[in-house]
Amino acid sequence: MLRLVRHRLRLPRHRGTTAHVCSAYPFQAEAGLGARGVYLGTNVLTGGGGFAYDPFEAYGAGVVTNPNILLAGEPGMGKSAAAKCFIYRSVGVFGRWAAIADPKGEYLPLADALGLTVIKLHPGGTARLNPLDRGPGEGAGVSEEAARRQAAMLTALLGSVLRRDLGPVEDAALGWAVTHLGRQQRDVVTLDDVARLLASPTAEMAERARATPAELARSVEAVTYALGKLLERSLRGMFDGPTTVRLNPTGPGIVLDLSAVHHDPEALTLVMIATTAWLQTVLSAPTGPKRLQVLDEAWSLLGSERTTRYLQACWKLCRSYGVANVAIVHRLSDLRSQADDGTATAKVAMGLLADTQTRVLFRQAPDQVADARQLLGLTATEGRLLWKLSKGRSLWKVAGRTAVVQHVVARGDEQVICDTDSRMVA
Ligand SMILES: Nc1ncnc2c1ncn2[C@@H]1O[C@H](COP(=O)(O)OP(=O)(O)OP(=O)(O)O)[C@@H](O)[C@H]1O
Ligand SMILES: [Mg+2]
Image (cartoon, rainbow, N blue to C red; front, side):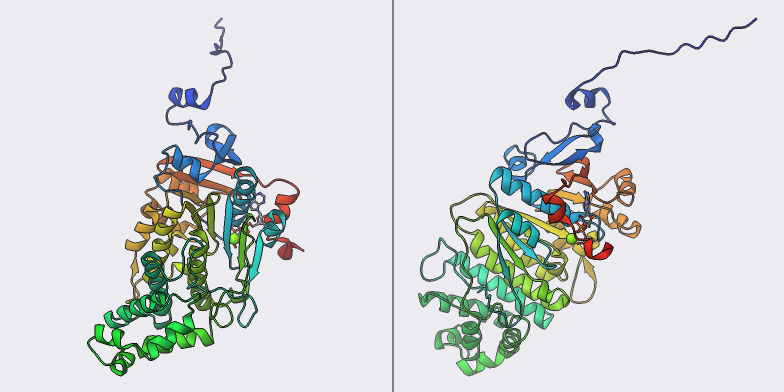
């Protein structure tokens, strides 16, 4: 009679570090990104080990060549919650300073918990920021770098209102106006001053344009009207005079509550441009802790090639200030800004992505996966994973390294800080 004997291979249980296991199972186990940084959750690819990250630590260790972070994903998948926990823990553990542009007004519990200064901006309100403020390190007058920064902001702002790139004379006149006002050694220069100067240019500006002052004023009148319209409508009371808010110099940061304009995407774009311009002056402080600039709903700055270029320029400047930028968007296709002829262009987006080596991808709709794969160079498996991710779980791509992270929101304080569902489920 034939007896069937089952031989099982029995091996003793072995435990090893992810560094060793990933060499034994090279295509199945990731080494992880190390423990430097704040704890964010568990890394599914390392068998549920802890996942920690800090952009400055990653930069210092040579893992990335820039500290900027992009979070992308469908609504409600946990992008803001991940950003809030990251800020909460980074301020607490590393003493980072955070500046948050908050178009939905949902960072107020975080502000409460951390003691961040909240500035609520609304048309006709009392809190006003001057996007032409000088940085804390700058004396009277405007440095060359600040003049360039101001001219870039004005170009993005007015180009957005006019929905076209500025003509060469308009562009130059804005630059001359900024330089002229900077030379006057005035304590405060405002958008009103620029509008007045464009309406009646100086003899020097006219000479540079090889025209009379009246002729120059006529050739830039579209820009002058656009600026006037901005000051009377979209930016009224928020950015049209000297700054009225005081910052706590030793505080942990600020939240700019922009919820009053969230319902109007066009106004939100203009407000985001002016807000980031003002933030640049704050972030340019030569001393102090390492800083985080967080732009939630950053799609509002990615709607056109002009604004995307402006955002990229701000990020480049931030690098010299020791700032890590965190941008939150919905679809990866948000990054394909629209050219004036309506065609989508990825050129600027690719530049912005090159400046953003930490990409945190939450669930994307299946029709977004091809775009995501192409823009971010994801593998087919990563692409398939993208539309299967559940709430709070994301694919991290950090300069070629990969992690799948289940973000952890701690009970108590963090649950309150992250909750954006209570009104939906109440
Ligand atoms: N990791 C998580 N654990 C538990 N709850 C979570 C987690 N991530 C998010 N949530 C909850 O899910 C809800 C939606 O999250 P969140 O507001 O972060 O989404 P979002 O991706 O920013 O959405 P939107 O694009 O609409 O802003 C919140 O109430 C939040 O508390
Ligand atoms: Mg959100």
